[in-house]
Image (cartoon, rainbow, N blue to C red):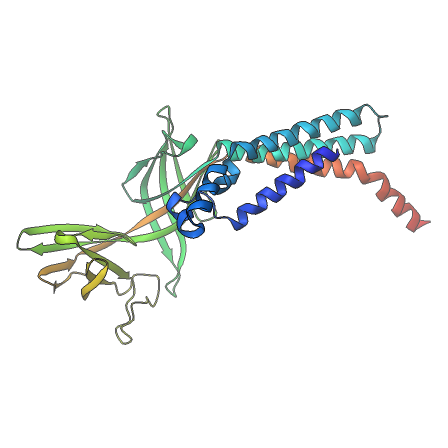
Length: 325
């Protein structure tokens, strides 16, 4: 039992490191923040991705084995309700660790952003081979202009080509086997045209995206769903698109050279080009997760409750009896 407790303390200490060391970042990130030597050491030792490292998973497996051994030793003792409760508690810890390790070893998640009518093939881990299509996406608004609900009609195709249709919203995810799809967020795609002497190009940009132009220039944008004409602030008055405007900036080397503010269906000169703001459409942001360890963890909590009741039931009865006496 002392060895098992030792393993548990070591695992807890190592897991705590994950709250201080940023996990699953690029090699450049660790070199920049920790220096060349320490950054390389973190990557080589697996401390940059603790929860998926082989040695961390191996320690968890050893902990489970020692707990099973401890349980076997206790079963040799005289049988009693308290002993059975203690054994069940030990098994619940084994299942809890096993479920967590299963999630770490096989779990996968992927964020996707799709317009109505678009689909994408998933690529992460156990999700690879699945396809998610958005048939319809709607946003419901409160009277004050804030979003009350996001609703997506999905078609999910598994690796065998079998299709499942489901309507999801915030707090009502898609569930199929070990896969869940959460309605996480929404955004806007703005569309328009850029006309130069060489011709006309159409752009379609989402948050944080830029449209590349010739000679190292680019077109950056900020979409304002409800522009306040009086304050002229790029901070939207409401999330609902009641007075949509688009701020377009011509950039070179990451520095702004010129900027224009366009109302929907508006056009203006920006540098030596003409730009238009033609339309905007909402897209849905989905979080797709695969986790086969969740049912195991759920069962472990049920077993823990049963074990606690059996382990301490007699003590509770004695205390109640003493109070009545």
